[in-house]
Image (cartoon, rainbow, N blue to C red):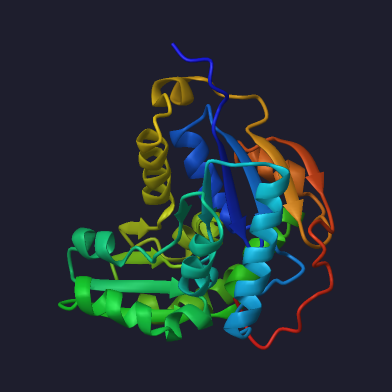
Length: 285
């Protein structure tokens, strides 16, 4: 029996999308404490120059760790994961987990070898997605859809704004025409839209995201560090999120939205970290 404090896990994203990953981590490790860090003053990252994304991510994460030490850092943002991980790992001595679109598990589940990839415009253009498809789904027809509205619709759910059904069906039309049976949710925002996505594409058999795989990776890293996973799995906290740190303002309805995900939060801080001035966006996340 150990009296060691519950491990803390820092989850970072540019907006609320990382909450889908935080939910998976909490379901896997309910005894762990979460810190959610969002650079919503810099949202959306999109086609921002890589140095801007790297500087904002590393600055905020290092400041958060200085204020609230954590055992694992999860970069729950596809755009940031593609550019920031090497620099971040060189700067901190905490294990870092990134996000990769779940092409490999999707290729293992599809029956008709037709896969859709829902991602942001930035992600669908990145060479690393080409490499994942070539390596794991080379025998599949892969249809990519990158639309800037999807992530904004997910952000608007926080305020209680419903997803516009007709516009969503229009965005998803290429997947319907291609009769895909499996869809990869290639942005952490998109699991928050899952109910609306399923209603728009009822023929799809498998919706695949990276949340559970990230949670298992965090579990493995904590085990490697000698943490008592039995105690972590059995000791749920009434407020599993110790703090939400936002570089910008607090979205209306955030605490209630998090509670609906099973992520009750103790405190929320706005304009945290000294990077509250918005970044001029040149694209979508």
